[in-house]
Picture 1 (cartoon, rainbow, N blue to C red):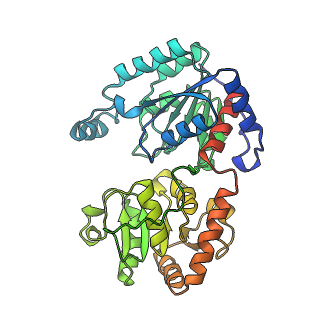
Picture 2 (picture 1 turned 120 degrees about the horizontal axis):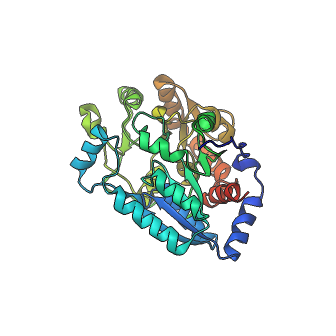
Picture 3 (picture 1 turned 30 degrees about the vertical axis):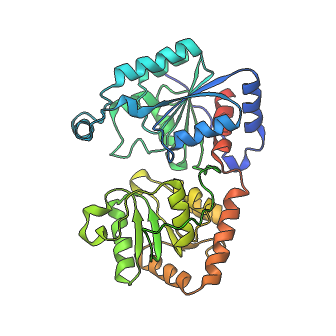
Amino acid sequence: MSWGLGSVAPDNMSAGSSYASAVVMASRASASLLIVGLGGCTDVGEHLRRAATQRECDVRFMSSNDAHASSRWLRSLTRRFYHDFPLRSRAFNQAVCSHLESARPRWLLTTGSSPVLRETIAEARRLGVTTINYSTDDPWNPRHATPWLLSAIREYDVVATPRAGTIAEFHSLGVRRVIHVPFAYCPDAHCPDEHCIESITGGDVFFAGGCDSDRLPYFREVINAGLRPILCGAYWDRHGDMRRFHHGFASPSEMAALHAQTPISICLVRRANRDEHVMRTYEAAAMGACLAMEDTPAHRRLFGADGERVLYFSDPDSLVNACKRLLADPGLRQRLRVAAREAVVRGRNTYADRLDQMLAAASG
């Protein structure tokens, strides 16, 4: 099967109101949407489900976790030896197909490295369901690159990617249409909250995210400079010099409180994903954080020049310098909190806006 290459749609900042109009028109026609995502309050799939409900679209959600082994040991085994192939994929994909056959939704939207297999996507298209994947993880990242995933991605009608640099690769893979859809924030989940976190006090900087190897030098330099980090996310406790600064995982409300209480919030991209921005880019700003932001073109487009809405850094030394400057100037911190939040919430940067964009592209 060979497909022609579709054109790239404009990004969300130039899209106008046609996205919202498309969804409203679809919902009035009793169209429906099936979302397959991880679920949970911090997952993009859940944010999109909320957005669909907000847009009064008939939506059903199926959790991708149901396709994978519940045992952490088995999941680790399949990741290592079987390209993370979902062990319960047959039953899960049968359930997806059953819903598609009975409900005949207008759209099937999957997120990330979805366990919806190529055959299921082909069946959806046979039934007249338009298929979309929001590629929240880079499928060429060695951690996610699997033959079954890349085979499935080829079948989608539309792939939305937050990485403009991967658009040509999706085209080369054979995807019919590729659009650039940045990450976003969920107004219900990502809003300022100064509720006190009594168990976590005294930090100078806050970071929420996994302990990737290329992130360690930044926080080692922060610690060497005498600053106290608060680290929330996976794997920090595997490193002895990080363990005492690790505080497990934080819910959205806990993160909002930490962004409010901690003088500085640090935003690092994930290099293995070839990111120019991350989910925290929008979420932390919407929560009212004072941001020391990794310097990337995407961050500059959103937040402007250094000192306008955030302070930028490009290496561990410049991160420490930015943190020291912010710690010495409470007035600057407060100004940046307000300016960064306004930059995000006054634009078309909610997950409802992103959903509008994806469904409009799929309906065109």
